[in-house]
Each structure stands twice: as structure tokens, then as C-alpha cells.
Amino acid sequence: MRSLLARKPVADIVAAADSPGRRVPKVLGPVSIAAMGVGAIIGAGIFVLTGTVAALNAGPAIVLSFVLAAIACAFVGLCYAELSTFLPVAGSTYTYTYATLGELAAWVIGWDLILEYAMGGAAVAVGWSGYFNSLLGMLGVVLPPQLVAATGQAVVLADGTKATAIANLPAAAIVLLITGLLVGGTRESARLNNIMVAVKLTVVAAFIGLGAFYVNSANWQPFIPQNTGEFGSFGVSGILRGASIVFFAYIGFDAVSNCAQEARRPQRDMPIGILGSLGVSTVLYVLVAGVLTGLVPYGQLNVPDPVAKGVRVMGLEWFSLFIEAGALIGLTTVILVLLYGQSRIFATMANDGLLPPVVGRLHPRLRTPWISQISIGLVVATVAAVAPIDVLDELVGVGTLFAFILVCVAVIYLRAVDPHAPRPFRVPKVPWVPLLGILSCLGLMSGLAPTTWLRLLVWLVIGLVVYFSYSRHHSRLMTKE
Image (cartoon, one colour):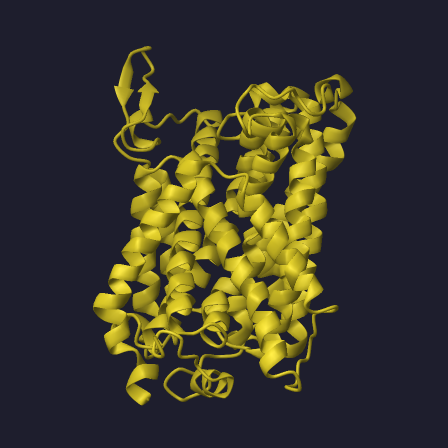
């Protein structure tokens, strides 16, 4: 039991991250870090989940779902800002938990983050595939339906006959392409991400500005549709279920915390990146959701490209092409940041001995965790090719909320055991703000479907088997002791 609760000292975590074999170039400034956050947050939530959640869960009240999710994120975001400056290293929630709750809890959350980032990247890749296929259709190119849907799904062929999908090949292809880019270097990836984020924000702002002139306020009635008799399908429970699903869209600031080790001045840059990206993204989400449900009756929005459908209602064909291209760029940035974050967590766990050492190896010239990056890229590409998006987004939601709760716990714990340690950024009103974050996350978790909880339980059981059969015996912390 003592070994399971063994904590990694904060000083050791910081020192190990700066050791010669693990040192990475500090190339990211506040603009790049904030762009990483916006790049991860503004994507699937706007271009995919807005339509799905409005059609199936919340109706026009999806704007309230986004607000609820943002409130929870605000509390948690403050905790992330403190921890990312207190421990300016890669590893995100995994590292914070290792320093507070011990090795077993750190393993559980690290294993959970694999689910969060991998399923998140796969879900966004599936959304990317939908817009890619739509854009090709506008250009007169039609891909075989069997190659653009999840394995086993029923699809309709051009002649009207039905067939079974083989795999979503565009979704897998974009993941592999971005994986290659990330292996090439952080600086280059960040520059490309900054450009893509600028294009994406331009597209989103244009949609809000133009779409506002075409809104039919009748589409907002009823604002909260009556419950269908099933929990989570409209009514107040639909708003809650919608918030727990769209929460997936906000995981970008979690991914941003992985930038701390590569930030030039983490004590200043990390709070700006985390809180700034969260604030900008929340405003844009609410505005897009309001405009979209005003353009299209909410019941018609359960499509792979809901924003493009809203543009088609305007009758502006030229703008449709602009939106399709912008959505593709926007979703690409999300995949990039999620794959980036996952590889850093993998590498950190490997450096701690909880995963095979080869996973944490840096490329001798590029100085990126290339084996970790390629491994996660292959896994995510496979999942994106075979799994449907509705299963993926709920898995991401429950994994994210679980991780966020532990971040809030970590702040409370570190304030209690090391109250005088220098903290460049401090969460106000501890423990009340972290407790509000915990309660908000628990409230959103209550809105998830029972099957989602079951999948999380199965995943965690598999993780415990891996820990007790391999990780516990190779832990560097235990070896050191």
C-alpha cells in the first residue's frame, strides 16, 4: 500500500524534466500557447457537436449547455493555470496527480488521459472526414460510401442500394498526416498551427456575422423542447446531457498544459494561454450555436457538417465552399494539439518507468518523442477508421471530467502540504474554487449515459491489469526507493 501511494517529489519532477537527456527546446511564447488552446477548443464543438447535440439532446438550448460546460471549465482552468506554473513540465494531469495522490492514482489518470486524448483525436478525425467528403462532393468528386463511414455502418450507394461500410479512410489518413508533421518538430508544428487558427477564427467570425442576418427567430421556439420521455433527450435533462457531451469541446486547455515544458516563460505564458483560450472559445461557441439553431430547425442538424448545412440555408454557395475549407482547417488544428498532448503524456509516463522506456525516447536530431508520437498516431488512426463519432465523443467527455476532478484535488492538496512554495499564479479562494470545479464536473458526469460509465470502467480495469503486471515493477520511483 505504501508503494501505491508513493508520491513523486515536486523538486524531482522539475529537475528530471530539465535533465540533459529529457530537455526539450523552449520555443513557445504566449501567442503560440494560446493558439494551441484555441486550436484544440475551436473545432469539433463548433463544426460537429453543435448540430448533433442540438438535434438529439438540447435543441436551441444548446447555448445553455455550452454555458454550463464553460462554468465548470472556468473553475478547472484556474486550477490548471496554478499547477502548470507550479510544475512547468509535460504530463498534464498525470504529473500533477503523481505529486499529490501517489503513483497508483497517477497511473489511473494517465491511463484515463489515453482514453481522453486518443478518443478525442479519433472523434475529431471522424468529423474532419465528414467535411472533407462534403467538400469533395461540392467539387464533383464522390468517394465510395463504404470508405467514409465507421466499420459495419449501413451506407447507401449511388444507385440506392444498401451496403456495409469498410472503414473511414479519410479520418485515418488525416491522423497519419498530422502525426508525421508532429514528428518533424514542435516549432514547425506550432507555426503551422498559428496560421490555421487564424484562418479558422476568420471563418467562424464570418459565419456569425453573415448568419446573423439570415436567422429566423421562429427556429428558436420552443427554446427548450419538451422531454421525449428519455433522460437527456430535450428538457432540462437534455441541457445537462448536452453540457456533458460538449464538454469534450473544451479539453483544449488541458492539452495546453502539456506545453509548459516547451514554454519560454511558463510562469507568465501558461495562465495567458489556458484562460485566454478558454474565454475566447466560450464566446464563439455560444454565438455559433445561437446562429446555427436560428438558421436551421434543430431537428435537422444531426448531420456530419451542420455548419455547412446552415450556410446552405443562406443560399450563398460561395460561402459554403469557404466554410467547408475553414472547417477542415479548424478540425485539423484540434487533431494536431490532441496528438501533441497525448505523445507528451506517453513520453512522461515512459520516463517514469510506467511504460516501456522506448516510448519516451527523443529523436536525436528533431528532439521530439517520435516513437510515442508514431505509436499514438497509429492507434488513433485505427480507431478513427472503425468507430462512430457518437460513441467516441461521450467516452472523451467522461474521461475529461474524471481528469479535471483530480486537477482540482491536486490544488487543494498542494496548498495544504506546501502552502509557502512560490506560486506565480494562485487560484483565488482555495479550497472553495477547486471544490466548485469538482462539483461542476460531478454534475456534468451525472448527465452521461450508463453505457458510457460502463465503457470507462472496462477501460480502467484494463489499465489496472497493465499497472500491476508491468508498471508497478518497473516504476523508477519504486526502484529509487
